[in-house]
Amino acid sequence: MSEKNDRLYSRQHEWAIFKDDGTCVVGISDYAQKELGNLVFANLPEEGDEVTADTPFCDVESIKTVSDVYSPVTGKVISVNEEVMDNPTLINSDPYGSWFAVIGEITDKGELISAEEYDEYIKTLK
Amino acid sequence: MKPLVVTGSSSDPYHNLAIEEQLLRSCEGRRILYLWQNDHTVVIGRHQDAFSECDLEKMEKDGIRLARRLSGGGAVYHDMGNLNFTFIAPRRLLSTDENFEIIAEAVGRFGIETCRTGNNDLGVKLTGEKFSGSAFYQSGPDEDSPCFHHGTILCSCDMDKLALYLTPSSEKLAKHGVKSIRARVCNLGLDIGEVRESVIKAFEERFGEADRAGEDICDEASVREIQSRLSSHDWLFSI
Image 1 (cartoon, chains in turn red, cyan):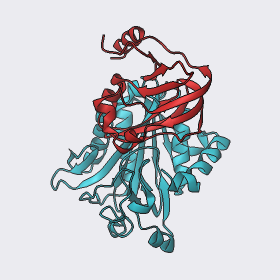
Image 2 (image 1 turned 30 degrees about the vertical axis):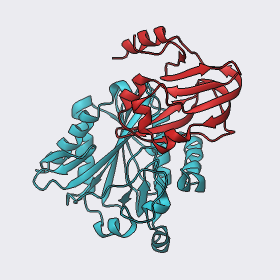
Image 3 (image 1 turned 60 degrees about the horizontal axis):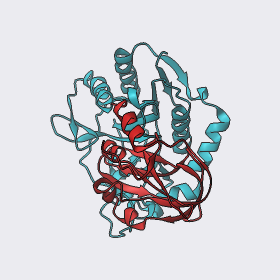
Image 4 (image 1 turned 180 degrees about the vertical axis):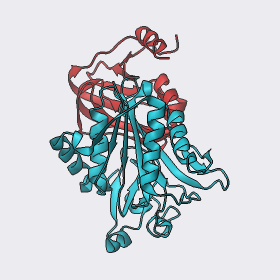
């Protein structure tokens, strides 16, 4: 098993860590960064943006393609990771440390699965 | 389901890009080939900064439109000497290698041998000069998400304009944004209409006989809505 156990995953390949203060930290999985290849741009949301579960809330560009990134929750963007915007290759080298955004005021969640279930799911994709 | 070939009739970049996006949204598992042309337009990549990539002042003076596409990559100049192709399908069906083969076959019928150049380009084998550049967009990373692979085929494009409006070596450095790369490009010197038919033929040989349609196959209200977003100041100038 290659995925981190400390968080949940979406079938659109985002990860989500729910914190005690009621916020959620979001990034993309190791599988997603590998599929995309070297990232050249991360177009992150802005603080204060309202986001909706299972709906695109930002996008990334790699040498291969532009791909939408889906929000795992419905809520409001509290902060974004400027470091990732300045240096998107961080997502390739450290997908589980390179968070995209922290979302608060959460009112709904999309379907999220455990690391184990996610690992099984990605095995069915290739 | 039979594949679908859609031939555009407009030369307005905002309308054409809206048709492309609407075909993507409504593809429902179908394989689609969309062929279209933009007149007098600079098209920048999704994450480029218009101010640092092109000479906006000169463009405005000469009546050249600025458009931004959904896909990544660098800035290009389009006129009626260029044919655009878009392959749309769910990710599990869309193979960029296969698409490149279709374009190579279509051009090969005119006796021109091609080769892959750079990451996503096709060139004339004899000279290595690029006549086709491609870019990609996927609406999600899973196998059912509709994706497109689109690109240009330079047939008789006004090459002087490329250098005139695009400023990839400009000193106006943007903090963010994807930079354009200057490539040696060439025209195929072929008739656009004949190339269009040849691409359709190569597509059908690969995937079977296709239904043919015009852009009026798209829901008009949806196209209008997408078009107004794609021609908005916000979409064009902020990244």
